[in-house]
Amino acid sequence: MISYQAVTKRYGGRTAVDDVTVEVREGHVTGLLGPNGAGKSTAMRLLLGLDHPTSGTVTIGGLPYARLRHPLRTAGAHLDAQSQHPGRSARAHLLGLARYAGIPGRRVTEVLEQVGLETAARRRIGGFSLGMRQRLGIAAALLGDPQVLVLDEPMNGLDVDGVRWIRSLLKSCAREGRTVLVSSHLMAEMHQTVDRVVVMGRGRVLADCATEELVSAAAGAVVLRTPDLSGAGALAADLGRAGMSVDESQPGVLTITGGTAEGIGDAAYERGVRVHSLQAAPATLEDGYLRLVEDEFEFRRPAGSTAGGPR
Ligand code: ADP
Image: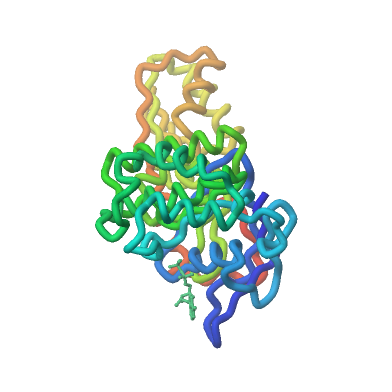
């Protein structure tokens, strides 16, 4: 749905986005992650036609943003919670946007309810907390009932309830088949929200994969204990064939790297091996992300290499 094809953006001598080719799929919540200055906001601005690539193309459903017939009904975006006019009420702000985009006024009432701002609708935005501004920005993004949602750091300023609310909102949008692209530096919140990740570093794509793929790449060893000593040997061979490495130096204890507890438990079940315990040191999205970004700081990515899963 969203497609970056060999996109480069330079500001003077600085390359903000460097030869990025990425497809953001519909039906998923995709997290755009990376340290400050990685190029995330620039990538989002290029998508929304707020800036133009130096080379390459960015399209939504095959068209650049500027050529969309109904931009607000195709792609809803929330980039900057500070850009809302402080003197206006939430309702007036949304009505202005709706009128401009030819969206019926009743949608304003619907989205205000959807983001939980119905009771604050007539208050001036200037008196809103950051969390309320975030909700208002999301309401504006939802106004045109768009197929694509693009949100830059939408969890900033939200309390625990707010984070939980936005998580379920984004997931339900994806379940409805929409394309959801969301940037954040809050890894713990993102881990439970996004099912795909695009990790950027210094303008380049370092990983473009399922969240679990990035997480499991950082996972520690899984330790399996069994009373079945002969079965343990056969299971170790199975796991080895599946690409994991297995330490069998202690009888009845397999220490396995390169696999998940789920996969190893399933393999034991299929082999008919009794398992007394299966312990995994769970990795988090933050672990996977840090591993990737630290590698990036230590080693320069070889020129011409393409993005795939985490290395
Ligand atoms: P992120 O959102 O990941 O923090 P940005 O996209 O904001 O990263 O910035 C990427 C790089 O491009 C940074 O080095 C930043 O200084 C530079 N940059 C971004 N926008 C501009 C601009 N309008 N003019 C000059 N440099 C810019």
